[in-house]
Image 1 (cartoon, rainbow, N blue to C red):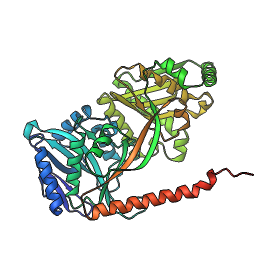
Image 2: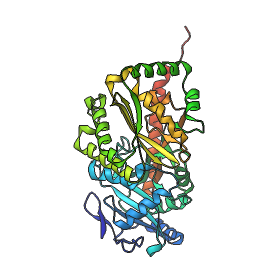
Image 3: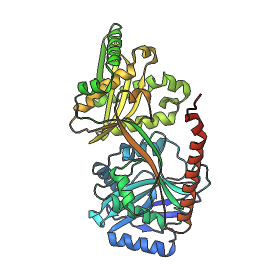
Image 4: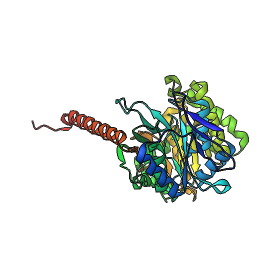
Length: 423
């Protein structure tokens, strides 16, 4: 029996898992009248079933279905795959009581999992004390796109919103962070027929080109900078043999992981308390995530050595047709040679892989280093959509009005700084 409790200890749902996919919801929260009845009718007509459960170690049937969904998702997202999510569940503290909403199609052994959405109740929407549902993420996760089967985006979102709309604990509205703007999952949410407001938007560097690594480097980086980097590389070679390696064997995984953690902790992140090895929890998370990625065939690690010593390392996650640059570290004793830039230039080799069409930098917006090397941009948005009617829809509109007013006030305050006054 797989059961879930909210923060007050009341049972949300209990699910039997036998046989695979035959999960059924028992003891669901109280419905919300006619709106809930209509939602339940739509679910029955669609042939889809919603299942709530705790975000914890999944039973074997769900684990298998989760992995299968990840390989056939409308949008790849390694941060939503089981090996990455479970690493966080095992080692990172979580605010609130995270749960997993599943959408299944069919019954019995032929049932198919078509959507997974980790979620949690938040008690504040920005500065407003408004309880709402949000997708569950943590500070080591750089994309919030849920896994949804390709071609089922609209149906899956309708089923998820209907399921949330008829549960007592899912209050007011759903706030989803980290969607790829205008991607299949974002478009599916819009097509589901609920109001869907974009409340925040950023652009971050992305690598996506059919050019060769050499041709991309020439068009992306100014000639003067390429000349300077060539000079720095030559000076680095004067100190010892310079070699670029890629993780090749399972036996290398543990020592390479040790080397990365040590390299990161020795730099500014270690001094600021932000390095993974600064706490046992984040170190254990990283070790499990990297091992899980390797076991799933998702891991690529690069290292730049000088005289046998690693001076820069890069951790990528590969999920065709995409990839994600997860972590980078470099030795600050060699900072004058720009080892972080040099290893990113070697990272252009990802363009030679026919199964990989793009790499997401996972960097902050306007990151000076990666923006100077990668010319494409990926827009990431936060969206909000109401759950049900009545009070939930009302609070959705109130919060959105408050956001718009706050945004206008910020622009008005900033406007004088942007004006150019005649002398």
